[in-house]
Length: 254
Image (cartoon, rainbow, N blue to C red; front, top):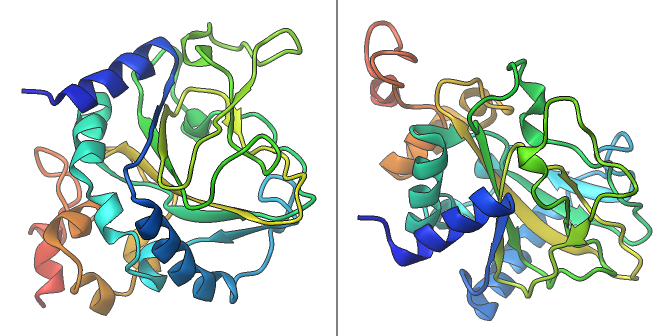
């Protein structure tokens, strides 16, 4: 039976394309995770193009560099929602994103547009953005175009379309489907804004990041079985993803 919390999120996703959940992390947990990510961010360069953001730092290969988001990636509520939206799923592009002061707004885009699928198609991507700082309009809260996941093929946002910003306190999470137009907001403050995207994709698709190369095998061996599965050590029924005829998790035992 579906939990009431998941049912409410799924109703929002269907109607608006997004859902904000407050308090999935306590203020103390959010502050702890931010402090641990700071050490990684100190070694992270700013973006290489306008899409990444020249004043924005992005932590790729997240699960190779820190254990701070292992529990979030396998959170039961996130898993329940992802299973309902995508069916069997995997992590696609887990990324820490710190939008720096002076960064302009990112172009509005759809995360599922990287896949050459004919529209309309079922949802194949589900995103979760975890706020480690309070998200405000001034510091670059994620911009969203409500109901744009239902638009006809070929339609793009215009000046007449409503764009909202996901203002939320630290510890909150916004769920949004991959067919919803969205983008990072402009940071007009003098402080950076940090969030972590845990993006999931249908398990039959190739993930954006190649986790089997990004996360060293000796690191993957230390992870929980569920996180190993989400990083690609899994089978999409009946047998997509095998390694030498065996379940890929067996390769961690060799």
